[in-house]
Length: 192
Ligand SMILES: [Mg+2]
Image (cartoon, rainbow, N blue to C red):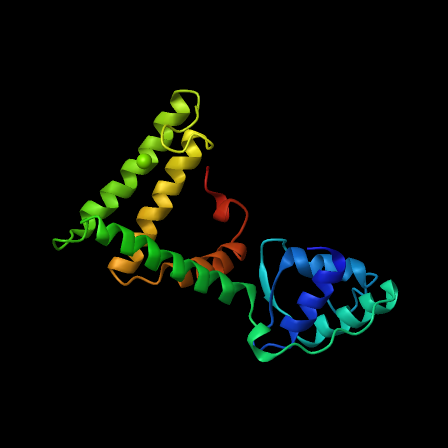
């Protein structure tokens, strides 16, 4: 998104209840507003932060500096955070993936969750094998490298499990991203 789109995006989302922003967007807005760092500090680019009034001030200052007109208020359905959009898209895709797996008979019998997890492992191993063989084009989708295709398999299996076992993986991803962003460097001294 360009600077103008970013200002409009931040303006809209600063008016929503949670007003959640990625650090990279906050930092760019600080830059566009001319670094009024007396009331808002730069944050880690991957960290999610909730900034409401401060963001509205940044939007106003950025518009003044770039000589942009005020963005008209958008209708309610447009007031969706990126996080909500991610969760909704993820869930819609997991339903489609699960329906395909069901239609192919993979859920005809009751499934053992340990077995599903083992199959997720197997896709990670296939990614490793692809890498060991020089990461050639995948045999089924040759427009992608082996590792790309196998990582896709990992995620497809995870999404299928999320839907089939009623696990809230999309929401958990959002929660873990927010938590990970607050952790110390190397999670407090881990070797790798
Ligand atoms: Mg595979």
